Length: 279
Image (tube, rainbow, N blue to C red; front, side, top):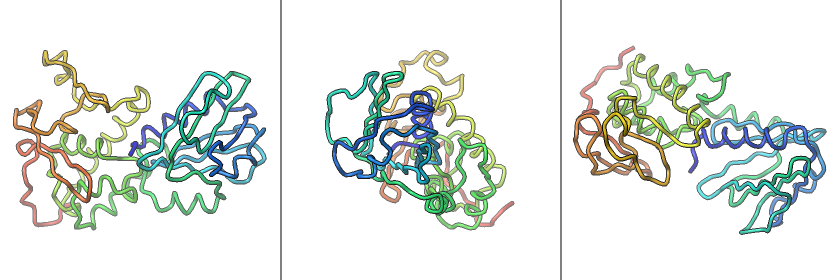
């Protein structure tokens, strides 16, 4: 499932290419029947909140709520109405500056009222990519939870938009035992993790890839080959099972936690012995 930086990056593309322009709106697949209501309307703004996107149009009281889920993808073309490929849930195009967006396979593509949208966003944790994010909301939930901190990091009610890659990398970068209960996490550790999300995720929006290694651990600095992976980016532990840790050389470990792969270094992130909640 795409992480929140992808949603923010795509919202920026949509705003740049469609903002202020009337658009052609269709649902070639026929599933998104409300597409016709948006046809000919002026595109106002796409806004991301975690892994959700909300797209508004002039003189339309509702906004389109998109959540890609596991299978959803956006496709773009610098032309109007290119040949249709696959089952397209929603197609937007404009001739002012020829451009087409195709949305295929999303978990959600639905018009929602402001009240419905507020219900969705109120249930989410702070989004590190939003200027209105309040990290105290995340700290309050973590500080009283017995769940492993690795599980809490990908709980959208705790951190909106954080996924498997950012959680593994932030926990590694601050030597946190991923299996430790959230209630044992120190305040300073929480602040370090939050600061990492706030620092690293905008780079993902900018570059379209996730890089998390410090300058001294880049391929150039270590005289090693660049990482080759469909997710791209230089990372410490994510999808590096069995490969040597870039810092200590210990083979990176992997296990399944709540149905998702968790990667960590047993040496750099040793099991915590904490038994008392600390501030």
